[in-house]
Structure formats: structure tokens, C-alpha cells
Length: 456
Image (cartoon, rainbow, N blue to C red; front, side):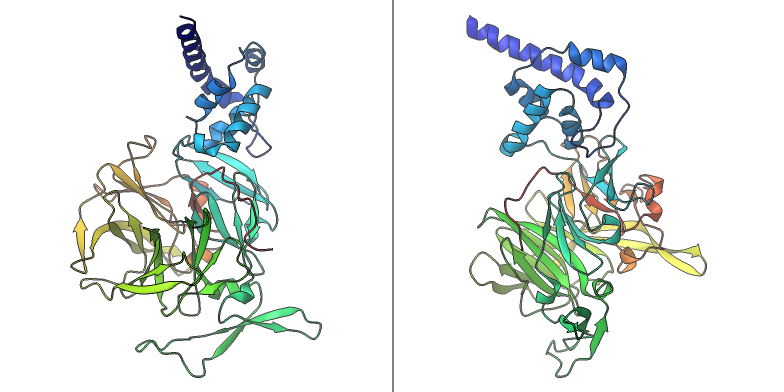
């Protein structure tokens, strides 16, 4: 009988917490100085003082149902709520709430070190103060698992988690193959050399004497970086960063603890990567699929498909792993429109979906996502169930700017919105994003903290 009463009491507390929680989350100030303050009301302060002390295990159970913005605001309600939040962060295996992707961008009015996080779940913006170098001076070249890959104004790469504020320096740019530092008399790097081309277009053989171009440290990133990916590293319980880079779309990677980038032979002209079944799959512009095993002391390579019969080389395409454990290739078609001042810009007008038939080495067009949604851009592409994310629209594609090279420019209007696959209609997400720089990127908030840096 006593046990039944205890269970009933916990359930009662839990229902009480879930009933009042939205009120506090709407009115309480942000936690840890990360989220923008919301003006508290007198009735909120009174309610907090009168709030019954819920058991820590009950609070943690309630908090485990929250998305991260709500969770961090809950931490500021009272000392006991903050304690439950801290315990949950220390035991992330208990916090398995699927997080709705958010759009990260910057605003000149918010400050050089502030990133704006637009929550699709709440349709509101949070301001996050990030460590130096200023986020507005960086390129955002990749996003996955709650981490951004950024290139600063010296063309050095950093991992950063906008929620926790943790930042990790990736191996130096001079450890990327083909990048040659040029020093002045004092031993300071003043320029970098990068070959214009390393491989012949037809044969793939290396050029005997490639033309070397030089770039200032703040300009190298314009010519070197194409895209970055962050994948779990099951062998080490950590992460692998994979980089597609110049001069010809080569592939390099770095694991936790590495002090240099490792070039993956033998290919070039890579456009997309995905990690599944403990293998890295890389897709070239011409439709070849290579597989790399990065788990051992040295990587191994094999060709999965040497070419897709009905492949078309689109400017923007993505590869995602569908729920049926098959690969889905997504084509994003643009329409050129007049932006004034004799400029033509591309706007997303159509999304085409294809299953990759490995056996037939062909693409099979499919009609729609049905009860799923896609997130496309500089981020790792995501294929999500609308049932698990009720705030999202099924059979819709959420896209951010990704036209080749234009994502690096400050002047181009941004190509950001939501496309309905039923009729190809598009809607804006939030209008201030159109002129934001660096180019906005999708990110799934995460509380993950790495225990040691990738490079020191």
C-alpha cells in the first residue's frame, strides 16, 4: 500500500510539473547567460516561491521530455530545477529527446560574437554568445550532431557547439595536402600556395607541374574548403571530421587526437559523404561511389559503384540514409531570377527524389516523402519522421542557402525556405535571414561535450 501511495505521489507531482512547466518556460529568464532574457512577471516570481519541491528523479523525467531551449530555461527557475538540469546533462543517456533542427545565423545588430538560433518548434529566436574568433568573421562549412565546422579569417578550422559554447581547434590548415605555407623573413606565414589543379580531368593522373596560386591567409578558405562533415567514430566512441577540399575536391579526415589531416586516396571531385555501417561512403560529381574503412590504423578503400547509368550532374544534390536503410539522392533545382543591379540569383523551385539502386547501378525516382521531412543546406542532410517531430510539416523540404560559392559571399540574397513537395510551393521561414552572413545553416541542438580536444 505504501509503495502504491509513493507511485501515486510521484505521478501526481509529474503531472503538476508538466502542467505548470510551460508557464515558467515562457516567462523565466534564460539560463547560463546563453539565451536572451525574457522579462519576468511578478506572478511568476510568486509561483516559483510557492512551487512544491519535486523529487529530483521526477524533475529529470519531466526535463527529459523537453527540447534543449526549454530545458535550459527550466534550469533557471529554481535551485532544485538547476540541479536536475545539471544531473541530466551529466547523464546524457537519460536525455534522449529528439531535437527539432534549428536555423543558426548571425545579425549585425546582435553583435560580432552572437549567433542567432531560430527554433522551428517555438518559432522564436534565441541569442547565443560564442567564444572568439567572432562568429560573424567565419564561414560555416558544415554542421552535424550539434556541432558546427567553421573556418576563421586565417582559414583555420574549428569545431564549436553553440549550446555548450565548447570550441575545439582542428588540425592546422598547413597539414592539408597541397597547402604550402609561404613565410616572410621573420618566419611569419604571409601567404599560402595552392595548386590550381592536381588531376587531369580525363585520366585522373597527377599533373607533372601544376600551376601554383598564392592566397592571403584570409582568402585561402575561399579556394580551399568545399564542405565538412562530422560523423560518429564507433571505434573510439568519439567523432571523425571529414573535409572535402581543393584544389580538385579531394577528401581528408581527422579523428579525435589527430594533429594533422589525412588525405584519402585515390580520388578527387567528391561532392557528398555519408557514414553508415561503419564505412564512409563518398560520392563523386560523376556518380561513382567509393567506400572507406577508417577504423584501423590505416584506411582502406574500395569502389562500390563505378558509375550510375542514369546519373545527371546537378549543381546541388545530397545523399541521405532513408529509414528503409537505403540511400536517397536528392536533387535541388534552382530558377534564376533578377536580383537587380544586373545580378541573377538562384532560388530553389523544385526538389527531385531518387532511390539509389545499388544492384542495378541506377537511380529510381520516387514521388514524395510521405510522412517524412528533409533538411538540406551546408549541414549534414537529415531525413526525419514528421510523426516524431510534430512541429514539422510532412512531405516538406526545409532548405538553406547552398549554391556553390554563393554561400561565401556577403552580398547575395539568401535562398532559405520550406518547399511543399505536393505542389512545389515555397514559404519563407523568417525574413531577416535573407541578408545574413555567414550563410545560415541548419543545426540540431546538442548538449554533447567532448572530453579532450582534437588538436592542441
